[in-house]
Structure formats: C-alpha cells, structure tokens
Image (cartoon, rainbow, N blue to C red; front, side, top):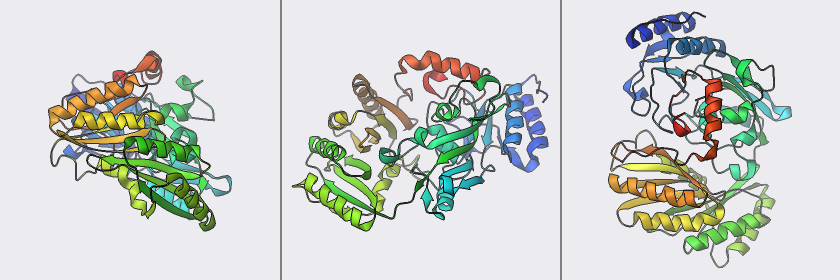
Length: 433
C-alpha cells in the first residue's frame, strides 16, 4: 500500500479521498456534514468500507497520510470522552452489519461491528436467546460502538459487564494489521487480551470490525416491582438488603430527582411460579413499604437521563455524568448531590445496585460546572469516579475523565504500541491519549 505524500492538509485530504474511492467505490466516500461533527470538530470526509479488508486498506492509507480518523457506528456517543485534538476522516462501519454466525447450540454469536443491537437481539430472539445487554439507543447503537464505549445497562448486575460477555474480537490497527483474538496474532498485539483491551477504549487503539459474544436464554416471563423509599438512607438500606437476600433478580436500581422520594425498581425473570415466589420474598424485605408492579418503561430511565438527538441543544444548559461508586456510598453520594445543587440546579439520577449510575444536571451553566467539579472531588476521595458524557458548550470546561490513577503510564505505552502516529481519536481518551 503506497503512502499519500502531500505538502498541505487540503492536498492530503484530496489525495486520500481519491485513493479511498478506488478502494470502496466513489459512492462510499463523501464530504462530512455539520451533523457529523465530533465534539465540535468538523471532519472533512466520511468513508464507509464494505468489509474489513477494505477498512484495513483505508485506515492504513489515512495513517500514512497523517490524517486523524474517528471510527463511527451509529453516532450515538460521539460526544463521550474529551474532544479529539483533530478529526479529519470519519470511518463508518455501517456497511459491516452482518450477523456472521449464530451458533445457537453453543450459545455464541459472531457479528460485524456495524450491526445495530436491535437487529442482533431480534435475530437471537428467533432461537429464544439474547445477548444479556441493554445499552442506550439499541435501535441505532452498533456492536462496535457499544464495545468501544463499554456501554452496558442494568442487566450487568446478573450477567456481568461487556468484558464478561465478549469472547472474541477482530481489530484493525492503524497500520492495516488485522488482529484476531484467539487466532494467529500478528505484529504488535502479542500478549494482549484484545477483547478486554478494546472494550471501553473509545476507538483509540484500533477499529473493531467483528465480535464474538456468549449468549443466554431469553427469559420465560419478566416482571418489574417498584416501591418508594423514605429517604436516601432508606433507599440504600433497601438496596443492600435485596442484594444480601436470596432473591434472583436480574436488575436493581434507584431513581431519584429533586423534590421527589427515591424509587427502587427490581426486575425478576423466571417462570410465572418462580416470579410469584420472588415477589413475595421482596414484599417481606420491603415491609412496611408497599410494592407495586411497574411497566418495563422504568428501565428506560437511564436513557431518559442521557436524552436523545432532539433534546440536545434545546432548553437550558445541561450536563450528563456517569458515576461509579461503592454501593455503600449511594446514600452519601445522593445527599452530596442534592446539597451541591440546592435550588440553583435541577437534577435527576439513576444508580444501579452495583454503584454505577448517571446524573443529569440542568440550569445555570456556571453553577453546573461548579457542581460537577465539587461532586467529582467528593466521589474520587471516596474511591469512585465521575466521567462527563455530555457538557453544554456554555458550561465551564472540565476534563471528561477526572483523576487518571497510576495506570496512565502503562496506558500510554499501549497506545504507542498500537497507534504510534496517534491516528485514531487523538486526545479523546484518559490523559489525552
């Protein structure tokens, strides 16, 4: 593969575009629109390869030309992480959308990165199976994007996180190397656990083209039971009591907002007889608080926190943050959040029993920035983390990631090993990687 040599950025883009058209055909290379900006940066081109061989050749071409590449699936989480330092080319995986193999007898599936989660789940359901994962915007979010952002929902309480569900991956490195876990490993990837390494890396190490997941049987029946807690301390007590019980719940969360009592939601998945027994046990734990059956829509509370394309940029400034805390610190964190916001900032949050949650702040931009900074300090002092998933442009600038810990030097070495030219999403990940 020849490298593109140019004397100016515009010439490099033009020469790259012409060479990319020869690989993927002219209709699959086009100018990027304003709607395809990446955290406020406007890329020049969108290239959509048709298979991983084409993707490898295009990525190698961009790497040789010194262009910054942003991998993109459904585009639902392009604002996550820090803004990249540069964004020249969007590399779209939407044409890599096949379910390669559903080995239903072995409870595994091999799927290309551009397949949407909804399409995948619908295909698995035909055999009474599912990928036990509930990411945001499943109708648009793609397998590669979900893996790159490590976006798992409430089902992780029972079935584990993405790193527990993925058993194989194919990753294209910036130099065009196609690395496959579990098979012959070429060049820089020897000794690395690729599935775990690529999960949550925001596309800064390589472009995911294919993944292999282990599956679970779809539940026979499902029911959601909800009840209100008296206050934050009572909510934490009930969450911990349910976790310490012998209940076989699939999901457990607490929903809170200013001027409203905390609500706890519990998801049971079993046979009808099994559900009845589980619910009776829950009633005994929650006494004297009455429980009621809720609709499945309560599990969309996390998605309501994050909002959608139509709500972004409308109304007063807002920010969205993801938190990770110890379950024993849930009440303390909620109390700190409420006191920091006081009457100046409206807030709502959903926290899973695992201690992973999301927060939405809306109101005065300066005050939101102060709340985020103070809340991050409080959470980090308790051993947790707060990352910013969305921040309105008027809110004072804050690093998306917060404290980097002592792993940053090793992470820099890995980035240098995989992407020495900083071609992929430069600056977007922790510590400006």
